[in-house]
Length: 234
Length: 249
Image 1 (cartoon, rainbow over the protein chains, first blue to last red):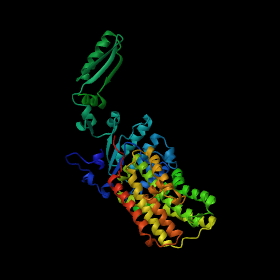
Image 2: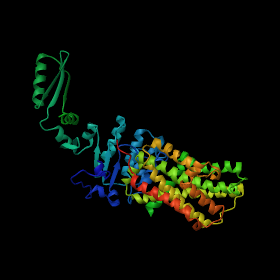
Image 3: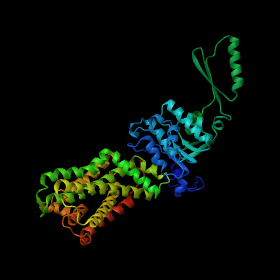
């Protein structure tokens, strides 16, 4: 991520973002990218709106600060000093600062770390809105449900190497096994099958014939998390 | 130019909003001037009017607190909190940013000098500077040299928490030994020996020669040379050691 953002020199190979080598990124190139770092880096004594205006001033064609305030849902806090914001609110302002230059490519480094579930949903909506506007977003995350929800393409990195790449459904689909879980006589039974429709039909038919209930029956397609664990366990 | 003015304005807002920093770097020399001026402003120090002597000394203390200590602490905190890194990702050119930070520091110091001179005139009947151009040149030289040293010092400080401890450890003893408060003439030999190499000794001598003894700045080439030499040392340290990001690991 930091190589793509131009912070760090590459060890080898070629890197190109928007047709330029990030290491030699010009001001014109920086006009077109937006960066949200892993940790918040803000001026504690400015208000939310002032912070956005300061950063807007660095760009030739920025978005309106008030519009960004709404986009990251800090409308009620727009005149509050940054140091009075909660951790999640600071992260949202951080996101706002990455967007205020109206960039084409947006780098979000673990944007929802430390968010509560509802704040995470809100942030996801913001990212979806940006995607709908045609922005390219590169997002890193440890939350695989986040990747599954937001990404068009997912790359799984292990030791700095991409070990799998594709759409979430490509990664979780294919010949991966589906898991069927239920309880019989108090014991949990877990089955894995590549042919879930038929297996489920057999199980339910047997149970009906015996007049039993398949307690806590659950059919689960593998999530990205399962795929990730499998890939990184090797 | 638009970016420079935008950042200069931002820097001024940031400075005055941070009340603790504004107090220590801007108001402390003013308060010391009022306190010590009341105590020995009427005495004669080193053959001149005490308050006049102190006023020029507090301008020396002011350059150390605003351009050196204040700048160094601010830049370490910004580096460690990731603000500098963040700014590097924007189209604001690095040199425009540095220039705005330095000019903003100079503006603050200039306001402080004007305030000290006005207070000296109003409360302790110190005459207005008779060599305003020489004084202005001296202030520019001092601010530039001490700002370079301040930026150079940032590379020696590893954490934001340690920044004010390290910086105060350097600048408070320097301010006292250099004779900004008192005449160094009565100091013991070893302190005088230290004072003889410190840049603030020479900057304070320069402001006193211009303000109290009415010399032209260009007759003080010795003081100018020492202050400038220290400025160059600071500049080299700043160029070699200045970082935009926290150290890794």
